[in-house]
Image 1: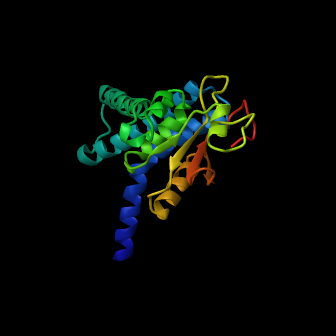
Image 2: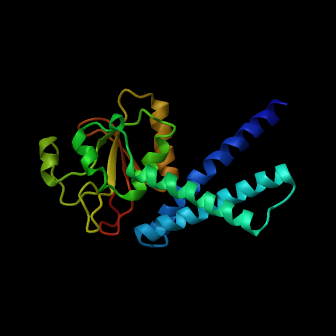
Image 3: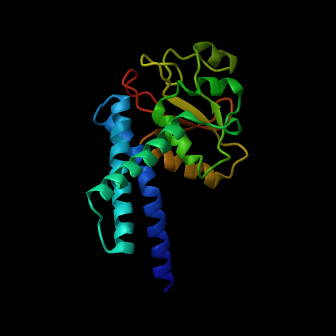
Length: 216
């Protein structure tokens, strides 16, 4: 009995989070493995997530009515699914609360962070509202100010496409299991995850960058 209940809960949670996984992981896969450009990759993630959500909606509709629905009904369902997915992705990429930003200047630079990193952060914020971005874009002088050796190349620097490919997240004042869960989440979504203890303990999250091959 307990096993059946646990399986039901696991299945329900999996079905709920699967669309978010498909959206982010799909976009990252198209960009880093298929080498599609950023926006076509995002569109690919949105399309496959829309189809998944459409299947969910059709299954639920069939459960209640015993029918799949006519052509117009299917079309409306598909459009509705697309609007939900596209709206969510747009909101996650554009919006971040001041409560989740350590310093005002980071928010000003947030629009220049790689869209998929913003998508990943915007999504996990729905669950982990206490997440705090501690650092984003840097220039060489920033490393000297922190007492660190200046880097010739860094994913924190703005790249040729106008985006930065790395961001730092706070680990202090957070339980270790939450930090570990955050690291697992970003790793599963296709991002590079490192625990840095330079000037302060933090998670360094980055995207694969064609301008700096192998950089993390």
